[in-house]
Structures are given as structure tokens and as C-alpha cells.
Image (cartoon, rainbow, N blue to C red; front, side):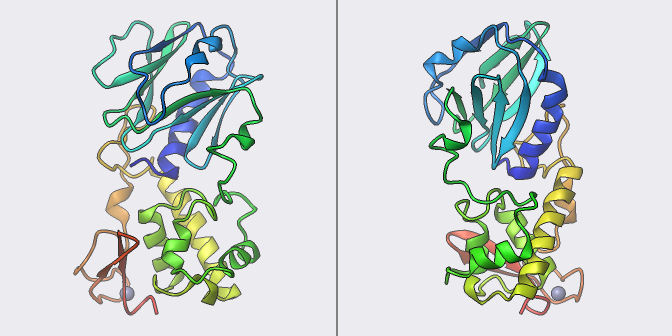
Length: 269
Ligand SMILES: [Zn+2]
């Protein structure tokens, strides 16, 4: 599933190829995505792409008086291809921009293509999203204050997009290892000092993943078509029974909220 780093890598790949270009037409090959593709996307024709932004795992194509909201779902990818490139079976949506097209491929069809002219931050899909982990807003004091009311495990807290967006399972595992925090620790027991380590770890890991071009989880292909290679660098994720890179203790796996958690019982107490 594309995570925040993959979406950010996609955004960075797309922005220079789209910004300033006029949308000549829209082609919907399959409207049945997670939600039906907005009927009014055809109104995009004639508009100019002003910016490509990201909020959580949503890509926002800013057209001045409205936004195209894109989500990659479980298996989606976006690519810029030459105008006229035939659509394959899983290519559901094209945004035509003169000599090129922005194409959404999404085999499992959990992605989204929506058009809104309301204030995009207030859109029902975006209004309840938590803090952006890479923004200055997520500092130690904010993280500490966010976690304080919650008795749930810190691992599950980190993955709750209503608190912090975009810290998926892999990155939650890796950040907790870096911060030396046991994944079962109740969120409200994380000290300010540990919050500082955790905030630094989250940002470090997401930035490293973005630099690496995003994790190459099976379905993701970057905007330029190249797979990422972050996966070879995991400290704990998917390493059950293997020795910790730091202390050689065997990595353990537990299940929290139906998701696998990997941790080093010695480095994370
Ligand atoms: Zn260890």
C-alpha cells in the first residue's frame, strides 16, 4: 500500500511535469473506484494546474478555483505518459495536458479521483486528518500533548491518522525502534523526553524513505516508473527471529490492532 513517503515521492515527481500546464481534457475509463469518480471532473478542461500538494496520503492538484483530490488506495500509481498512450486494463483515469497525460493505474480500485470547489482542507475526507509528521507542527511538545489523553499503545496511537497522518505500519515500527520505545507502552506514559526522541525518529525515517524513493512495496512505482529501495534498510520491520542490527538480540513479532509489530526486546523497553 502506498504510504506517505511514496505519495510524497509521487508528488515531487509529478509537480514539475504538471504545474503551469493547461488541462485539455479528462478521460475516465472506469469510474468505479473506492468512491465513484466525480461526475464533474470533466469541468477540469481548460483549467491550469497551479500546484501539486499533499495532505496525508491525498494528492491535491490545485487548479485555482478547485482541487482534484487523488488517493492511491491499496495499489494505485500515477505516471506521466505521452499523449495517446493506450490505456491498459487497470488504467482508470487520465488527465490530458497537451502532449502528456497524468494516468492513474489502480488494479484493486481502492483509489479515489474527486473534484471539489470548496475549501479543500474542509473536505470530508481531509477535515479530520491529524498533524503532518514532517511539518514543524509535530514537535516534541505537540506529540506529548497529542499522546497524553490516550491509553492505547503508542504503536496504535502512531498509526491513527486522526492524531498524526501518514505513519503507516512500517514507519511506526521503525520509529519506535529508533526511539527505543516498547511498542506496547501506553501512549499517555510517553515522557516529554521520549516524545522528543520519537518525533525526531518519525521525521528521520519518513525523510529517509522519501530520499530512497519510497519503499518498494509490491505495487508501488514512482512517478518516473522506478521502484524504490528503502526495504533493504529496515531495522526491525519484517525481521522476526533475525538478530537486531544493534545488539544481536532476536527481533520479536506481536500483533497489535490486527497489524504485525516487530521490535527488539532489549533495545526497546
Ligand atoms: Zn537490539
